[in-house]
Length: 309
Image (cartoon, rainbow, N blue to C red):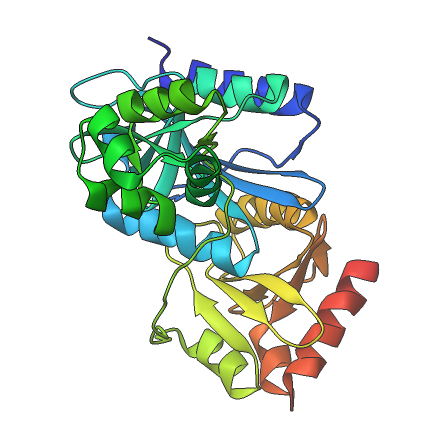
């Protein structure tokens, strides 16, 4: 079994071969993701763990929140759970985060072979095309009862396959494909848009609260190199709050890489003085500069101005 370092390097190698642009690795704790990558419109926030049970609910919620606000998709790549190795070609879900083995990722990105199976309580399941199933059954004059008897399930279950696209076991799905000599199993879309309800979070930091008072949408973040995602009509800004220090410089460099891949901007509001206008593409804005602003557009304009210097 690969350890986390080897597994992460392997994931990075595959992403590069598959044409993804990749951020610097997020090596600052705490972190909800290890790296961010993009290919065209597909933005992935990736977490890599040998044992996927290491992803807790709080971290999973944060990577899903980040993905939502950055218009990306979360993905956990691992090798095993506490009890078993992850099956090749199967998708697992850890607190709502799609989870696959390294081989499944390779098959999808390099060979174009999507996973067909997903894990849930009780075993492995597949999704079938219920509308197509019903059309095939009607065209061939097979009644619900006849098909149910052939499958060893109830009429109601077959009806749910057709009208509700209820998922089924692998054995039943394969039997259906054998009966109709048609492909009915649908691939699992591990990059499907997130459906996540989110309650507004309280903004405790005074500087971030000031940004909100200026008219920005501010989404506090606790497990990333930045402290919030700040949004207005013009732009999205990965926003940090810090005193000037060597660790702040390191975070600012990482934020610059992340903003490049996510196609956002990055800025650190310095609690104190700094003679530096920017670190790479991360703008540095003194707190006193922020306090003279009248609207969030002033903040956006200053970020762009400092990035251009």
